[in-house]
Amino acid sequence: MTELECVAWPPDPIDTARLVLRGSEARDRAAFIELFAHPEVGVYLGGPRPPHELERAVPEVPGQRRGLFVVELGGAMVGTVTLERRTAERPDGPDGDRAELGYMFLPRAWGSGYAAEACTAVLGWFAAARPGEPVALRTQIANAPSMRLARKLGFTEVARFEEYGAEQWFGLWSPGTRSG
Image 1 (cartoon, rainbow, N blue to C red):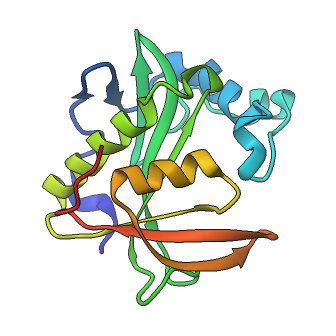
Image 2 (tube, rainbow, N blue to C red; image 1 turned 135 degrees about the horizontal axis):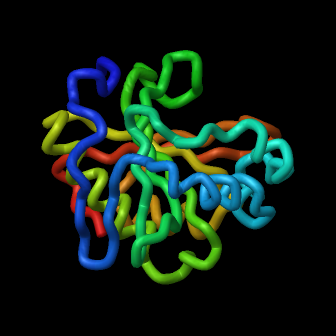
Image 3 (cartoon, rainbow, N blue to C red; image 1 turned 120 degrees about the vertical axis):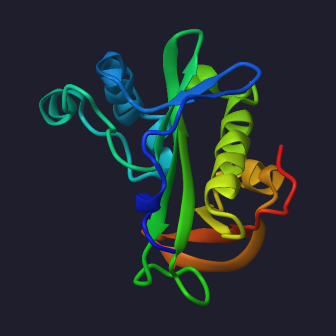
């Protein structure tokens, strides 16, 4: 896969039943800092970052990069969904050159189906933008909610491997796979 460079970015906002997925804006800065500093969010992602470091490091308009969707609920950011190029250096199966789905949500948004709704919308957008291309996902085996979401979205296990001192799960989703 080439980078998502051939796809217009940011895309028009994607509306779901309850959410808006859009590019980031300056008003999202505090939520980005909260997301990366929150201890529960960072459990399977290498731990939280100190808020004072984030205050210095996070730009005025955070997350302005191709492949990052801000997930908005009721006018406020509650998480992000990303589609980024997976490089061949990372363990992931046969060819290593594909889009990888990622997601992070604030704890107040957990347990309401927002991640599934947002990821389903992003996968649908990707399938339309890049027809026929599969999407990869990896998560720690110990992250039970993320494992459930991966399966609910239609990802199928391809491999398990050790990385960052923990067992990781790697799965693939193909455009014909039902999600949600």
